Length: 175
Image 1 (cartoon, one colour):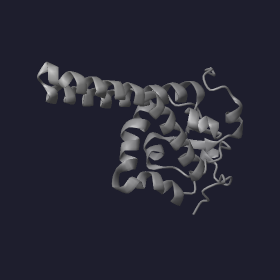
Image 2 (cartoon, one colour; image 1 turned 120 degrees about the vertical axis):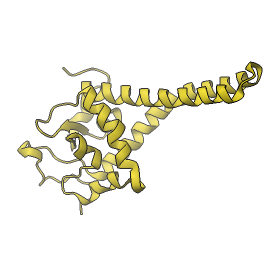
Image 3 (tube, rainbow, N blue to C red; image 1 turned 30 degrees about the horizontal axis):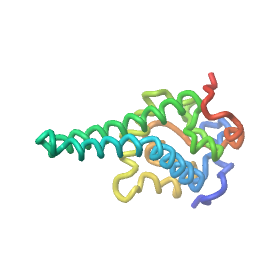
Image 4 (cartoon, rainbow, N blue to C red; image 1 turned 180 degrees about the vertical axis):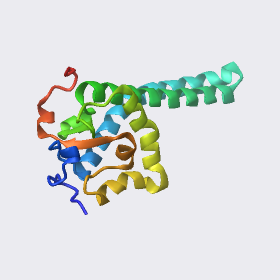
C-alpha cells in the first residue's frame, strides 16, 4: 500500500517520467479547493436564500420561492465548480489547491492539460461515481500503485507530483 505523504517514484505512467501524487497531498489539495470554492459560493447562496426567505411570504408562494432558490443554489454550485476546475485545468494544468501543493492533473496518454470537456466529465459524473458507496472511488487511490482514483481511471487522467508547479503564478495562463 502506498504512503500517504510521499510520492511513489517507481510508477511511471506511460513511460513519461510522471510521479504519481501521494494520496495525502491529493486530499489536502481537495480540502484547499473546497475552501476556496466555498468562500466564492457562500456569499451568493446566502444572499439568494435570504432573499427567498424575505420574499416568499409577500409573494404568497413561499414553497415556490424556496424551490427556486434551491434550484439556483444547485445550478450555481455546479457552474462555479465547472468554471473553476475547467479554467484552471485548461490554463494552468491544476486547480489552485493542487498548484499550491505541487500537483498537476494531466492526460495519461501524453501528459497534456485537460480540455474543458474532459474536466466536465472528471469533475461531474466521474467524481460523483467516486463518491458513491462510502467514497470508495477516492479511497481506491490508496490501494493502487499508480495512486489513481476512480474518476482518474474513467477519464484517462493522472494527478502527478511536480514541485515546480508551486512556483508559478496562479492566474496567469500558460499557453
